View 1 (cartoon, rainbow, N blue to C red):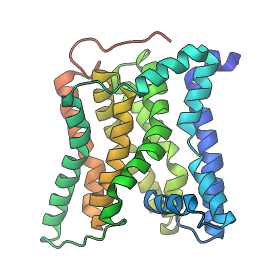
View 2: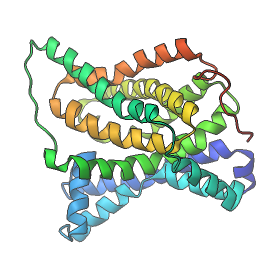
View 3: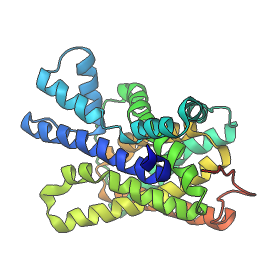
Length: 295
């Protein structure tokens, strides 16, 4: 308890990593044993099979272990309870359900992933002379159910931790840009077991490039997220952006089978981030002083 009170941010990240890496690595190990493939899309299919009792006990255990690797959410709840008890959890809940933020920010939240995807696909098509190899990873009829699944199992399982707990505390010490860099790097590293799972067969050099590219791309996207959060103080919008963004990325970018489009989808958020920092400034990423909470 004393360590948590003295080092709340370090405690949060250590616990988030420990929970996620322990459970997800266990799931990844079992998936290899039972010839299962883990991804957002396949996990959605496993979920449907799970609730219909179609998975074997081994497959169900694998799916459950991987899905329970929601380290950012569990860590935020545990550390918040340790620091501030019920009042802290109530504040986190209020932020996570703050939906009344104005239509403008819903348009931004829902529109950004679509615009980024269309721009990435457009440039990708130009690079291939208009050739298009679209193969949806899930049927279009699954779009809404998959979006709801992403909302819960990526948005809710991560954002109360990243934006609800960590970002306000980082911004109580550092400006908005530096806070975003710290959070973005740590958010990127949090994904490393999954990146290894997807890319280990390619060799060490491509794997290192994957680590660097993913983390740098996430930092740019984190700056954009910080801009939205600072202007709305709404973790709910972050949850929505996370789930919606993953859904759009799956149906447009990943299903396009275009390496160029997939690369650009990670790079283009930096264009937006640089514009935002020029317009709003690196200190607050908003006009006026950002709301600050003493921690």
